[in-house]
Image 1 (cartoon, rainbow, N blue to C red):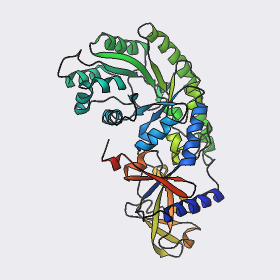
Image 2: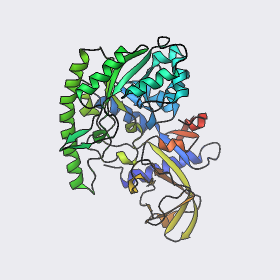
Image 3: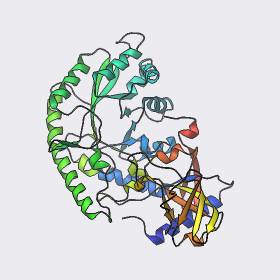
Image 4: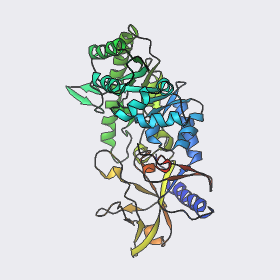
Length: 407
C-alpha cells in the first residue's frame, strides 16, 4: 500500500511549514528526509532480520549523517559500500571500521591507498569473483605481497537457473561449486590475501516489486519466481557453505536486500543482511508483500509558471533513476496528491509541467514534493539534505556531493 490522499495532504502541509519556517530561504531542489519515517523503517528492517545484523548499503543513502544514524540503531552493524574510494573515506572519517565493498574494484589509485594502509586493510573487505581482481590488487602493491594483508570476499551468483535461463542480476560468473572452490583455493594460496566472507545477492527477490495493483497477473508470476529462487538458493547456499567450511572459517555470509529481508535471514548459511533502500523507501519500493512502505525521502520544487488553468509547471525535476528506461524511473509528484507528469514532456531538466485536479489550485511559488524512483540517487543532485521532524527542519546534513565527493 502507498500513502493515502489525506496523509499526502498532511505531508504537503508539514513539509511546507518546515521549509517556510526555516531561518533562511532554501533553493530548490530541496531534499528532505523525514526522521520519524527513517527511524521507523530502521526498526522495521531490524525486526524483519530476526536477530541477524543488518549491514547498511551506503549506495542507498549517500549521506554520511544518515549512514551514522542507521548504524546507531539496534540491529545494524557495518557498511556495504559501492566503491573502494568510498570505503576508504568512510574509514578515514571514523564513520565505520567494518566496510565491505559490494562490487569488485580495479581502481588502481584506491587499491594503492588500501595496500599502503594497514589500518584501512584491517577495516575494509574487497569483493572478488575472478583471479584478475587479485591481480589488480597485486599490481597496486609497491612493497611486496606480504606487506599488507588484504581481506577479500567471494561474490557468488545468486540468480535463479530455470529451463536453461538465468533470472537475476548479471553479477558474478561464480555459480557452480567447483568454480567457487577453485577461486577460494586460489585466494587461500596467494600471499597477501585473506578470505573472510561470501556474498550472494538475490536481486531478483530483493529488488523486484511483487504486489503492484495494476499488474496482478505479473505480480503473481513474480511471487512464484521469487519463491522458486529462494528454494533453489536455500539448497545452493547450504551446499556451498558446507564445501567452503572444509577450506576456511568465514567471518560472514552476506545476502539479501530491503525487499527480501525475512526470506534471506531465514537461510541458515546467511549471517547478515544488506539493506539500504528500506530506510528511505523510494518509489520503486512501494509494492512489496513483505513490508509496508513508509516514504522518508522527498525533494521539493516550486511552481514557476501556469501555462494554462489546469497546468502547473515547476522549475527542474528531471531526476531520472538508473536502470531500464521506463516510466517507473521518473520521479513521482507526491504531495499534494492528484498531480501527474505529462506524457509528452515528462520530468524535464529545467521544467516539469504537471496536470491533474490539484494543478489548477496551485499558485506560482507553491512547493510540490516529489519522490525519486531509487534510493540514494536523489542525493547525487544536492549538497544539503534537510532532516525534518514533525513540522521543523532539525538539522541540515551534507550529502557526499556536499562533502565534495563523487564516488
